[in-house]
Structures are given as structure tokens and as C-alpha cells.
Image 1 (tube, rainbow, N blue to C red):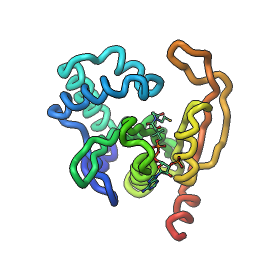
Image 2: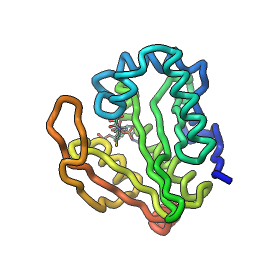
Image 3: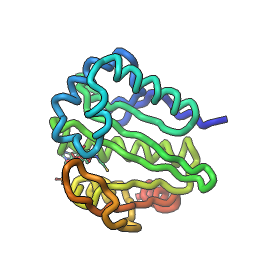
Image 4: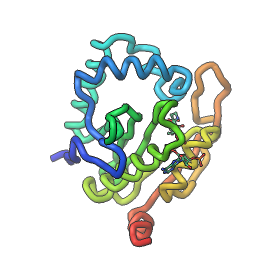
Length: 192
Ligand SMILES: CC(C)(COP(=O)(O)OP(=O)(O)OC[C@H]1O[C@@H](n2cnc3c(N)ncnc32)[C@H](O)[C@@H]1OP(=O)(O)O)[C@@H](O)C(=O)NCCC(=O)NCCS
């Protein structure tokens, strides 16, 4: 049976839940407002998904991936006021290890508030406690200093640098950084 993490839960300041068809309109507006900010992170969605129906098809695909235990994407909203914040996901599991990757974005407007760290920590907890993984991985383009700061704040260790492994839209290739967090390291952080 594929694992089934909760489809909705909260942290100190955030509501994390699966997308619904009714989110399509606001998500599309968010994409339009954040084109430059998300250009390197969501290039395919920005290029190919331009209608609400297109987005609903993406949400349906995500729901199928969820059922298969391949991808768990949570939208993020402020608990107070309900403003959209961004997204956190667990992806690319290797159940033979077992391990899984965490990723995230915030909208430009919601940056600099610690929401990415709060959401990433929640997803990491889910990965260890609910999915039972041994390690969580995180990758970021080497020039994405903000993402590297999020990784280090969550307790990740930089494990490797893959040269010219990140594809940038209309730009030169850049290196990709791989971070890892082991269960024992995460448990030690909970005791502090
Ligand atoms: C990567 C990304 C999520 C980082 O966003 P961010 O706003 O820097 O990260 P956080 O939401 O965790 O906020 C951290 C900042 O909030 C500040 N902050 C303000 N209030 C805070 C609070 N109450 N609690 C914690 N931190 C707070 C922190 O000091 C920190 O600032 P600093 O890094 O300048 O010291 C964002 O830049 C983004 O979405 N980029 C595009 C997509 C992307 O690159 N995703 C990652 C791909 S690997």
C-alpha cells in the first residue's frame, strides 16, 4: 500500500493542504504575478499552463501521483487571513532506501517571513514520522542562495556539487547543490 500522509494540517502560522479544483483561479493569478520570481523553478507550468482548465488538469495529475505515493504537494496559506503563501512538496521517493526529496517556493510577496523554513520543516517531519524515511534530500541551483539558507536552517548538510547540472531559462548552465538530512540528525535537532 502506498503511504498516505494527511491531506491537510497546520503549523504555527500556516495551513498546508492539497490543492482543490477551486484553487485554479487564484493559482493562475499568482503565476501571472510571479512569472519572473518563479521562472527557473516552474518553467514548464509557466510556459504550458495558461488556463484554469489546464491548471485543474495539473491538480488532477498531482492527485494521481499522490495516490501512487510518488509526489505529495501541499499549497500553503496563512492561518490568519488565509492569504496564499506558496508550496512545499515531497517528491522523487526511493522506497528501497527509503528517502525522499523536499522542495518549496513562496510567492515574491510572502518571502522573507520564514514561511519556507516553517513549511519545509513540517514536510521533513512528515517524511520522517509518517513516511518513515531514513534520509531527506534537497537540491538547489548553486546560485540560489536563499534556498541554500533555507536548507541550512532546516539542518541539512551540503553533500555534493554537480557541475553544470542546473538548467536556467535563457542563461548559462549552473551547478546544482545536493543537501541531505539523516533521521538521527533530525532527531537530534528535535531535542534542542
Ligand atoms: C527559495 C525561497 C523559498 C526562499 O524564500 P525566503 O523568503 O528566503 O525563505 P523563508 O520564507 O524561510 O524566509 C527566510 C527569511 O525570513 C526572515 N524572517 C522574517 N521573519 C521571520 C520569522 N518570523 N521566522 C523566521 N524567519 C523570518 C529570515 O531572517 C530569513 O531572512 P534571511 O534569509 O535574509 O536571513 C524563495 O526565494 C523562492 O520561492 N524562490 C523561488 C523558488 C525557489 O527557488 N525554490 C527553491 C528551489 S530549490
